Image (cartoon, rainbow, N blue to C red; front, side, top):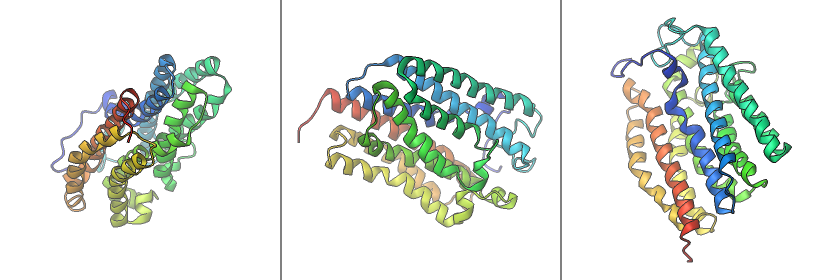
Length: 304
């Protein structure tokens, strides 16, 4: 890929650890909200975090396996996930390790059930199904369900599951608070779909971006990265979030980098590739600032 540095094929790249914020931010968001409601169940938070990381890792590995097995990854477009096409790793090994991640997560789920009860089971089953069937089994990615599944499973259910694990309760306020991060983590996958737009369209993969067309999918990408900066002030005004969460506005620096990159992404291959890392960084920074703001609001409340 012109202008883009080739990755080193191997297990490190197959696991894609730089994507793990997709699990870290929502789990910590749910944990921070639970903390502001009097929960100090740090062991349960740690279990939720490990489980989330394993689910994300399983999804990454099984996605690599599934795209290779369906013929989507070829010699022509394998620059970002070259492990199987290049022969560096064997497909069955990647599949087995991905399934092992799911198996370990299931074992952690049993521990969580023993510690808190059966209520957490539904969250666990949803997580296993979402991670395990992205490109394997149901293969819902190829039917345009990738973006909605990420929004629901990682954006909404993951923080809700963490909160439930730590408190035994559910919260509509947490649902509202989760929306900004849900939009941004969905934008990451949206950027991935835009980057792979041509190859997905040629292969007949009906992602949301392919169904919408490039220009509308880019509009969705921009909106998903922009709306969180509007939602947070609204939630502050209605007193769902503390004023301290205005810290997220510091992330506008990375928003501007992301937005400027979208202007050339269609015609410049490097800009097209950078849609994903720029969305990653924006989501990381915004998410962590939101979490810090929630905790500061609890520790140092301001009446207004």
